[in-house]
Image (cartoon, rainbow, N blue to C red; front, side, top):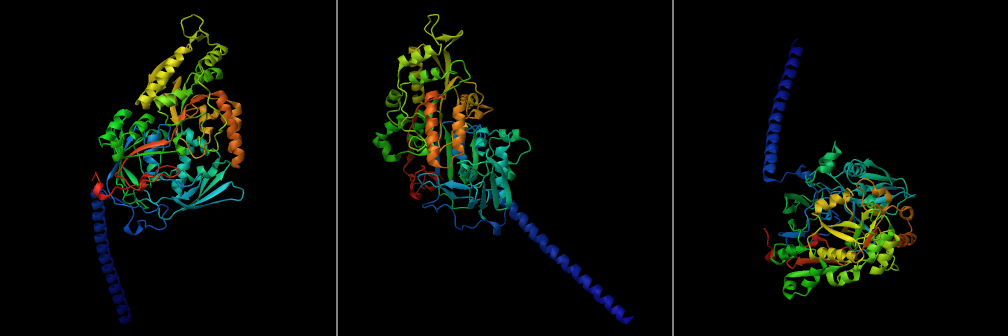
Length: 581
């Protein structure tokens, strides 16, 4: 009995000791939880919320960007000619301004173009490497281990899959972007850091489309209703070096530096995009010091290049690079006026492009004849611009059946007068003067041109819905482009970018064959043939391409012109010259 009693006493003592120890541990854990809760509340109150623990925060290793030189601080105030309708860069509502603001600043790709390489070459960014299968039908991409979205959530393979699936969702309003991804069969997750792209067929831009797209955070952009995604205009979260600070509607968008950026942070702490639709007012804002950085009109560039006082304060930059693109007049072939290629060619003949270049654009630029980069290998240098020739225009209109049957000075056909609206986005004297040239030239051949100035949001909506007759606008470019997006007949549907309704079986065939041609020299032969076909068909009257002009305040330093243009992240302002705090 005594042995049993001693054993019972021992276990009772052990039980009480364990309970006391657990109570002490619970109290310690409670204190730690209390401390962590207080820290969390402090972070929220200070606006520096970061979802990972201190031990998990990224450490700079072999980063893809160089560490930027110079002092930290100041803001870059940039002019935008129009306010974006959305900050979602993949929907059809996105403008060039949307992409300037978001891509590279807030959202980042797996790989970036090497900006100092004369051609297409990629350098790792969110990804660290890729490999291709022997047959070229698969690409496996490995993500970096130290990449984070601005809210502290790690970038993983799930985000890459989500982005691809979102682009391919037919309910998402991104038909023009989706056209580049049609040859991708699937994107699969190997593990959290590895994804594999599998392809249905060979496409010469396969590597580019698989490696060079912005990665969206799934936990932010995931949706149940595609309409909700399409209409969300002010959501902007990514892995980039800046975050959205505020959008003052009608005035400006402000980005502030992402202090938790996984890479080397830019030195400039704020990017401010001011909306000034009138280019004269924009230049006045530059000259008064309210704006630091602007893309001037051609005539503004020439004028200010001769202003010695302006040159003391501002860098006047000019450089050729592929993204500059080209301007054009698009003729809606679904109208009674522009179905016939003879009419479209006549419209090109009435445009005195040489005179416009000399007197309106002050000689700053060159006349183009097709959609490819004028200094690139895709463009056929043997295609020469159609001349200004009013008599030939009259002959072509007669041949197409547009004659002045009632003697009122306006041509007509089947009871329809040749009287069309010419839509454009006003804001500068160049566009207004070009419209006047077209109105005057049209009157000389019996065509009445009605100026139709439209605010940009209305203008773009008319294009997307095909509610226009003729319009002037421009396309940006790439190092080497695929004309599928803007000229293939499949892109006439919905809100695709073939908004002029160009439907040509031979053009479709060339585009499709070129997509399957990996040998660049053979592909250039096809694109030269396509260039010549467009020259005959004239779905567009191709106007001008020009070097990229920029005005930039001289307080910014380390401004380098790369083969692919400027990189704002490299710039800094010395402390003694900083203007904004």
